[in-house]
Length: 192
Image (tube, rainbow, N blue to C red; front, side):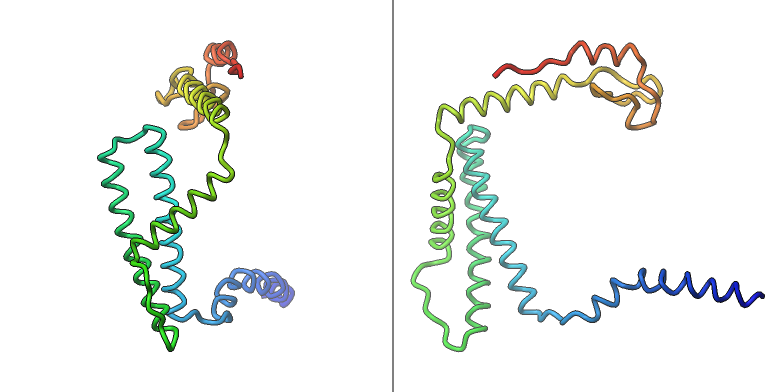
């Protein structure tokens, strides 16, 4: 073989190989995370997820999207999960500190306190009631418009077609001009 070929292969192959192996090299060069740090990170993420779920559950209940029985059952389950996470965080903190402090409030009370603080923060930036009704009406109008955006079915594969599509998202077949004209005639802008 020609030595120029090997030189060319080395000049091109070495940078590509280095670039492709970069994630493994940086991963091994980074400082290892202790199991305690990993557990702490996981527990904090779970706590935030539970707090977000509780806040979302509260909003859904106030909007009338769920029955009181479902709300109470889901809230109790989330509160139990939150209490478990807070207990685990407390145990981890006790292990980390040499002199653990006695907790005055139970885990459930701390979840309630965190939830109350989050509610107060949301109410501080809450939308006035009249504007909230207007926003809810706009959301409902948008949902109705999205439900009526279907203009027909693909003649090739039968997939549902939305307004504005020139090609079928499933098979790539071109949408017939008659269906595209139908979608242009349906375009309306909801009034405020």
